[in-house]
Image (cartoon, rainbow, N blue to C red):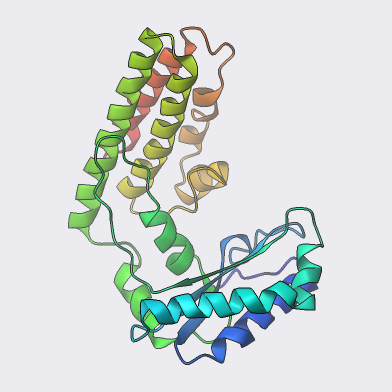
Length: 260
């Protein structure tokens, strides 16, 4: 059941404008509302985010051309201009994509990546603006409810290893008195931990920087885990032993909560 909801009439009008614009092009399979509007969580100050899925027969040049034509169109359209001036940070974001989700292989220092986030926002939690096309239905069948167990196992191991690698760097930077660098690596490890927790539970995330309470407490149904997360990044004095203690706590959470 779709949760699609527009917080203002203007959001809906601009969405319909985008839909009508792209549906007129032969290469377009489905126009999708994504992010907060698709989940019914948008506010009047929220951006309007859409993703335009092109058919498998479309070339990279076709997709790029669609994006270019839309940018030129929206620059002067009065409805889009009205929307962009409705709030200080309100924008219309339209991404043209080909439906190809390719998992990356990280080297040392890699991660987190957007593989699961993109599938989640563009397939699992997206809301077709009109009747979904055949290609979108095909992608749903391929990627939902989650991708295959072999890929899941290999990606989980990769993300866990990267998280440990980054936590090891926290201690190394602290030993050199580079406390702000240590905090940066801790925050990177924190996001990799979230990625591992979602993979372990075969659930697509929305983001590793937003909606953390909702995602962990509700989507993963782990309110007890969420209660342990805010203290990990709450440091009274950055030039103290706290960062090392936080890294140790995150390492224990990784061992406890990211087992498949």
